[in-house]
Length: 218
Ligand SMILES: Nc1nc2c(c(=O)[nH]1)N[C@@H](CN(C=O)c1ccc(C(=O)N[C@@H](CCC(=O)O)C(=O)O)cc1)CN2
Ligand SMILES: NCC(=O)N[C@@H]1O[C@H](COP(=O)([O-])[O-])[C@@H](O)[C@H]1O
Image 1 (cartoon, rainbow, N blue to C red):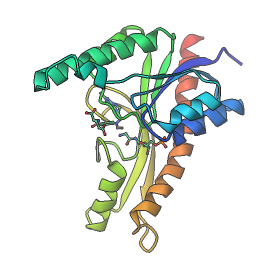
Image 2 (spheres, rainbow, N blue to C red):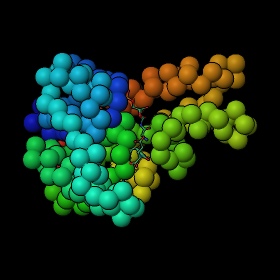
Image 3 (tube, helix red, strand yellow):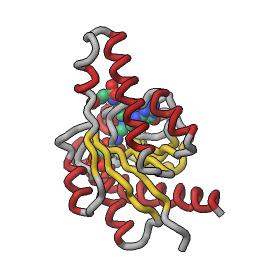
């Protein structure tokens, strides 16, 4: 087996998708070394999941940057750009070949994207919607509301490349989820069903990208 691809995972919350990846790596089913798990939220349970798996962690805090700038539109933008530039430096210091966003609730600016592109680091993201639909946060709830209003009959989850335009990067793997009358009316139960589909999609999608990166190294 080729040398494992070095990957950094970005999270903000529970980390159930991170756990799915950790478990598959431990089983030898994903040829990657998770070099670090980084969160923008200190209380992210995913950090605990990483610590239990002996994966290095880091909490990168935006508030510290916001305090150094006025609370104006320009000041907040400057803070975010400084945050993102440092985020890129912190991640590149670990020498990853791949960055995987798994519930990372921060829009990445060119100050992050450009240094990683220059270093030839691939960035992918898990998003609980179909391409071009419900970009951004709360996608599951928004799709469910649209179904309840009779506007759509399916949603989905996808792994996609990360570009500046949020959730508009090239889809890598898409799993459609048709809504089921008499089963999906409860939004919480539907969310659980989506998350279970996500776990499998993350494993399959990350596996596809790892194979692609391995091929590029041959
Ligand atoms: N430039 C990109 N950045 C990110 C992408 C992307 O495709 N391009 N994917 C996301 C993940 N994501 C959806 O999959 C996403 C996460 C967060 C937001 C957002 O609006 N964040 C707000 C803060 C919201 C909060 O703290 O609850 C913000 O950053 O101001 C949109 C989409 C990862 N980043
Ligand atoms: N726009 C990004 C987004 O909504 N991502 C979503 O955050 C959740 C993270 O769950 P987890 O922390 O249990 O892996 C997942 O549902 C993921 O699709």
